[in-house]
Length: 273
Image 1: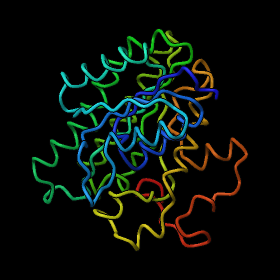
Image 2 (image 1 turned 60 degrees about the vertical axis):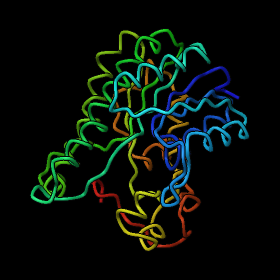
Image 3 (image 1 turned 120 degrees about the vertical axis):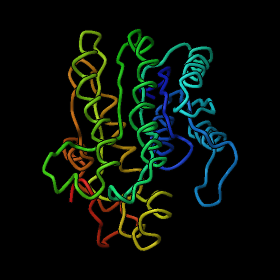
């Protein structure tokens, strides 16, 4: 129970990768603040803040459901205040909430462009801003952001410029926070998968069941998050990790366990393959 007494504040934790990370930490005794918008289940997406909390409690942690749209700064402030009121502090921040839009410049409408930047960039920045005062008080504080390695070769940027610059901005914030917050011993790292991950976004927006079957389960990122977050915040900071890199460092060699179809072909992620 190495995370017993620790509190993780996780955005977008009502389903998918965020929920998987929440459950991984809960099994190690963590308190988890589930920060997301969903209070009624959408059949296409599954999961709400309340269903996630039920799973967290069953896994051995303590969950707190907080409805919050991270595009709204006042809602962020209230969510942080609720976390402090219930658990007394924040030790871990996981910036998982994100919006996706895989379209070229002409096909990206203004509302969608604004949405991905309001959530991925502005929202991530503001959630972190309001958690920092409490992370400063923690004994091994970590910020973990779900964003890719930065490669400025145009072939990585050209297909989906609007979306890519929003995700790269999240990674640049990680690099900046690692230096800005080093004096407070607050670690800042990013994590990204080598393959596609079997989530509702992959199924509904990217490739249906066919792509889901060529993906890995969200648990691969949950395990990686666990391995990163248990490191010393004084020593492990400023990294843009890939999941396979983290697992290799931890001596995990059986990656087939994470495949939706063990032994099947895998689809590489759009910023890696």
